[in-house]
Length: 389
Image 1 (cartoon, rainbow, N blue to C red):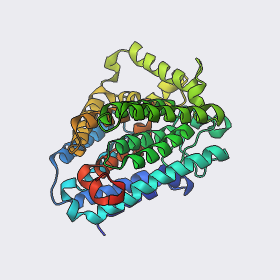
Image 2 (image 1 turned 45 degrees about the vertical axis):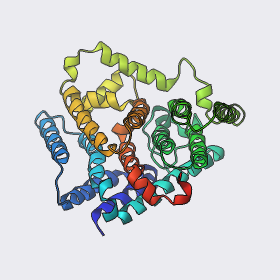
Image 3 (image 1 turned 180 degrees about the vertical axis):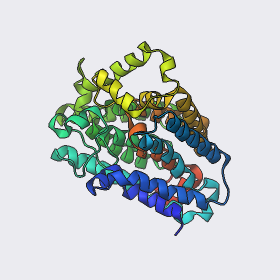
C-alpha cells in the first residue's frame, strides 16, 4: 500500500480527541511528520511550490537555531508545516481515475467524520459528558470544560476547532451538487452540532452564509415564497433549540465581561500598543509565555497573534503567502465566487481561535475537503441517487 493511503487513514484515525484518549497525543505530531515526509519522498515529480515550502521551513529552522529561539518552538514549526505536507500527498483531481481507490477511501473517511462528529456532539451535550478526552486549546475549555459551560468537543480537539471544521463542511455542502433535500438534511444536522459546540461566531456565520447562499445561488430555482418559508422554518427551529432546550446558550447569554472576548481584546491591544519592530523576527517560546503571563492570559485564542509573536512578521507573511498559493491550487476547479466565500468563511472563523496554531487538524481538513468536494472528484465518488441530475 502506498504511503499516501496510510497518511490519509492515520490522519482520521488519530484525530486529537482519539489520540488523547489513547494517550498517544504527544507522539502523533512526530509520527505524522515522519510518515508524510517519506510519502513525499515517494513522489516522482517534485512540485515547485513544495520546494518553496521546503526552503522556507529550512530557513525558519536555521534562523531560529542561530538566534537561540528554537527551543520550545519545534512543535509549533511542525504544526505549521504538516497541513502543507499532508496536502501534497493528496492526488490531484486530474488524476482521479489513477487514484480512484484513494478517493473512495477519502469519501468514507470524510462522511464518517461528519456523521460521527454530529452524533458525538449531540450525545455529549445532552449527556453532559465528553465521550473522548479533549484538547485544552481554548480559554474556557482549558479552565473547566463542562464544569463551567456545557460544550461538546467531539473528535477534532476543542469545541472551537470542531465548530470551525463543521462550519467549513457546511459551506462545501451548500455549494456541492447534492440534491436540495440532502443539502437541507446535512446542513440541519451540522448546524445542530454547532449549537452543541457553542461556538458563537460559527453559529452566526453559518446561519448568515445560509441566508446569503439561498438568496444569491438559489433564487433562480426557487420562488421567493418558498425561500421565505424555508428561512422562517430554520429560524424557528433555531429559536426552539436555543431558548427551550438550551442549545447555543452561549450565543444567547453574551455578557460584557465574557472571558473569551476579553482575552482576545487584551492581546490585540498589546499588539497595537507595541512597536512593530519588536515583532519582525519573532520571539522564543519562553518570551511568548512571559508576554502571556504579563497580560494575564492563559491561552491566546488567535492563531494570527500567536504566529506574529512567535515567528515574527516576516516569516508569518511568507508562510501565509505560500499557503495562499497552495489553497488557490486546491480550489482551482471552483468558481471564483465560491472559492472566495469558503476560504474567507474558514479564515474568519479560524481567526477567533488558535486552531491553526495549536494543531494541524483544522487547516488540513480545509485541504482535504477542498479536494473531496472538487466537482470532478465529488460527482464521481458520491452515489448518483444523492446528486442533482
